[in-house]
Image (tube, rainbow, N blue to C red; front, side, top):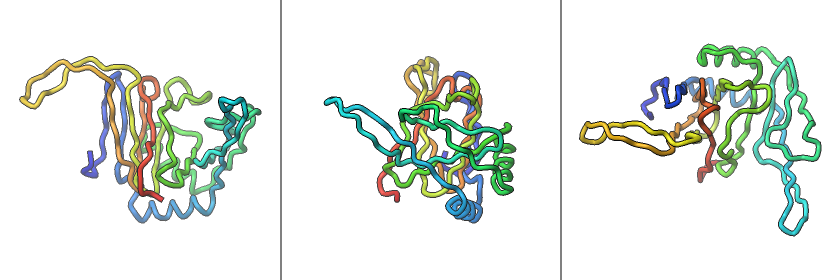
Length: 213
């Protein structure tokens, strides 16, 4: 899957992933990175957790977040603050964000009403296994993930074991079972669309990677 071609991946449980390794040209990706840096304000949610000694500690999430939407505000993803009802005020759509969203809609074969930015400042900033099942996204949301900047791996694993057959080295079919893992590299300008059933039956993550700043 590293030949640069676009793929429609059909996974077990009637799941579909669309992967465009070079959705944007390098020049387009550079321009978008500059625009996001200039115009988007990232927020850093705060976590509260209790130590074994009973002391409550507070830490700031190193992964920046921002929302673009004309219709509503967002709750804070993965926030454990005392006021969980707190909302971030979304930035309104501008011509460049609306144009970007429409372009991703066309490639995703879907319709979106918001853009959600995540900023991973270096290779040590990760997001662990999860699904995008936040309230308001619906029971089976379609998520288009456009990546700019350094290459990061985008990992998937099935929520339960798969039982079926797969080809062996000698060409025969053999029974197989286990948790399925799939990793796609997201390059500067890559687009990965998590399609139908991707949130019902799969987890995804962005693992740590050394040497990225």
